[in-house]
Each structure stands twice: as structure tokens, then as C-alpha cells.
Image (cartoon, rainbow, N blue to C red; front, top):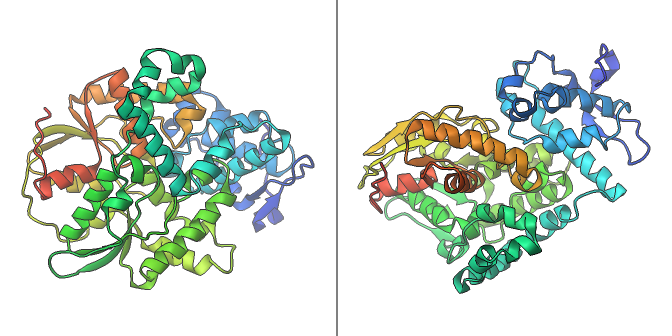
Length: 457
């Protein structure tokens, strides 16, 4: 790896373009690169460095490679592409960094440059852009696929494909991922939640709710429960009918162009449903979505037509636990008699800096005993579509997570991101221990509204 030389004065002036001629320049904030002081405090927090012990798979190593690429001394293909693809994008390094390096912005720019370069070379995985730009661009497409999968489940076709080995013969990679496939809700949440719902008593807040893409079709119950909790604390809840995927999967996987397109769509959709100036909060119950939407202001900062609205939108975004922790809460009507542990979703704890709010809310649940999870803030290996693109590394990280879950003796794992929930549930089935995996919203719903009592350990 090229050694860093001393930065010149003009290098500190901002963006700098690499000198590559094969696929255009690598545009990156050079000042952010130079902010890294190479102290190494990020190394113990980085899952891929812990997996490999290799400098090129550490945050500071990747930043050095970014600098070399920006200087025109390193091609985007080869080691650079491999390293950026191996990164989880968990941003644990940002939490550990004493210099405040904006690694997330650097990483997204690098991923975008790598994928653009690979697309020109014809080496980009064939399914990647069609998956992101096709399936996750319009919620109607995902809903149509969800209906097909649910039909296959109800008819027994999905089970037959797995048990007979037919799926493994026809699509071995898909067969390996099948255990992590999300369940399909009987009805999507945009049919369970009206465009506007009002509380039984006085309206204290006017909020908007992201129903999302995967959450909408696979965790419709969690979205409905979120709306119920918001109504219980006096919120008038608005569901923007024209909302689409937040764009996080695209932005974190090298397709910033589509991410910006989706950000504009959502800003317009939410502003039309309830003017942003009149919105007290845009409530999100998926950590990855919330983190990305809080970054809309940065994402569209260079767009004069959208920058101001995007910044206002981003300022309104709140994780559901972040919002509920600041309002007066109802007296619980039920109990959750369980020994549980809490896994910090990366994009909640590292990207949004939210750790105490969900724990404080859960501490108020009658009957719930919350035990600490060792290494709770280390990624479980889900990381968007990382378990699709890097299945071996993902599986090893999941193994670590399940070993730590077993140490707690808990019978319930609580986590605030759908990808984490699916990953840990798959780990419980394959590796053990036998645990129930729930969203904090579900636990709070059972306690606040007395919807269900759990005997889980």
C-alpha cells in the first residue's frame, strides 16, 4: 500500500479528482481523507480487520487506498475494489475515531466509483444494478414479488423446492440464502395504516411514518404497531401514499444516482402528505433507513432545487425509540415476562448515535429482564445486502454474534433493524441458541397496550 506523503496546502482545499483515464476521475473529499491521522484506534472496532488482520481491510487502510486512487496512483479495479466490497459499511470506525473522520461519505463515494468502473469494464455482478434499480425502485414491484412468494409459501412450493433439493440444483446461491429470506406479511402495511390516523384524545404531535420497502411487505405488523404506539402518545399519524424506498440500499452499494432520485421522491411525497414545516417528526423504525434519511441534506446538498427541502426533511427524521423516549408515555397495560438481550443495529448506534433510548424504553417494560450482550455494537453480518455479496464473511460474523447471544442466557433478542432481525433469526435456527427475535416496537406494544403476554424465559 502506498505510504502517505505530507499533504500540500492546496490538497486541503476540498474535492480532488484522480488522474485515471480508464473510467473518469474518482471524485472524493480530499480534506476528509487527510483528516485521518492513522492512529489505529479504529482497528479493534472494525469487523473485517478483526476477521483478516489485514491493513487493507481496516478503515485507515481503506482511506489510504482512497487517497492513492484520488491521486491517480491506484486503479479502482483489483485490491481497491476488493477492499471496498469487503467493507460492511457498519461505521463502527466513526464511533471510535478521535479525529471525526467522515468515513461514511468517503466509503459511499468509493463504492460508487468502484461500481461505475466495474460497469464500464463489464465486471459488475449481473444481478446488482437490476436488483437495486428494478426491485427496490418502486414499492409496487416489491409488493408484486411479495405476493408471488406468499403464494409459493401457501401452496407449499417454496418448502418443496428446499426439501427436494431442486432449489439447490437450479440456483445454489439462492438456496444458500433462502434461510435468511424474510417472511411475507399477509397484508402490506400501507393497507393496514390509513393515510391519516388520529388519536382518541387530543393531538399533541403531528408526525409522518415511513412504511419503507422490506418493512412494508415483511414486517407489516411492526409498522402497524409503530402507528399504534404513536397514536397512544397523542400523535396524529400521516402515511405519505407516494413514498418509496429510502434509497439506503442504493447509496451504500454504489448507486448514488438512484439514491438521490429516491430521496427527491420521498421529500416531495412527505411534503405533499403533510407540509414539512408542520411536521413534528418523520418517524422511522428501521435503523438503516433512518440513518440514510438523516443524511438527505448531505446527499442533495449540491442540488439547488432540492438542497433546502432535503435539509429540512433530514432534520425531522427520528428513530421511533428516539422519538418515544422524549414524550410522555402511557401506563403499561400488559407485561412481557422474558429474559432478553439487546443487539445494537450498526446504523442506529454508529450512524445515528442512538444507544440509550431503546434501552431506557425497554427498562420500563413490566416483567422484562434485560441482560447485556457482549460485543453488542459489532455488526451481525447482515449489513444491507452484504450477506448476499459476501456470504462467507457474513456467516463468520453471525457465528460470533450467536456465540455472544448464547453467553447471555436470554431467550429473546431485541433489535431495531429488519436486516439484523432476519440475520439473527437465521443464526438461531442454524446455530442456536433458540431465541425469539423481536423489534423494540413489538415489545413496547405488548407492554403498553397489553396486546400479548410472553413467557420466554
